Length: 259
Image 1 (cartoon, helix red, strand yellow):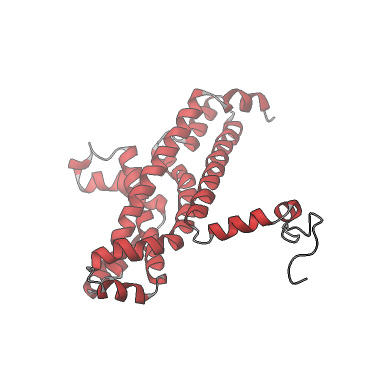
Image 2 (cartoon, one colour):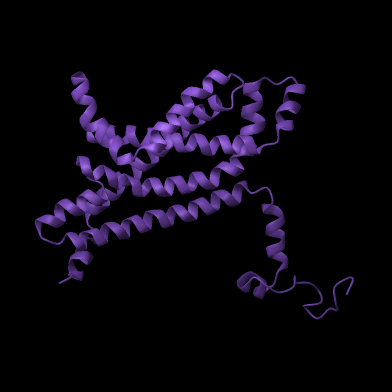
């Protein structure tokens, strides 16, 4: 029989708060390193030197074509067997962070490359005509414009990263999923504690959804225009997404110009 009292007792327990914090900081660090790796790989891929693209293609093929779970297991169990000197360095935390970062780097490289190629090539040519070096033009002209294309999928990748950390439970990392499994098995309440873990995942991803929407609005080049339209629309327009712009005519001052 499902025990709601167990869910209530553990919902705000220090045990799950610590597990949620572990899930969050691992996701943040892994995503950060994944973005950095992906940026360098993307720049190599779009470089004017073709020989730099081949290692990137192999890297993306390897990490996108194999499961994250397998990569975690290879790093944690395989590397220490091949290189015994790494036993003291390969912990559950380091193996998880390295595996998630390397895997995310492969996906982010494609996302960033797509953002860079979405910028018109004339932008780079104009920058060079002004005497800018390739690196300076990429940093000041291309990447800021590419960010508008990169940010939305990057936000989705971080949302997915928050949930992918659960794969580290197979090597004994006490994040949300493994915490629910271990302490749930002791009292035969695994299902109840998995519900608690699920609620924490939902809270984390929902909060990130609001943050992502705020970031996307901030980088939207048309936000000023959209803000002006929201100000012009009446209550029905803002709530129900229809209705004519508010004007003197709606306030009883006669029809708008041209009517």
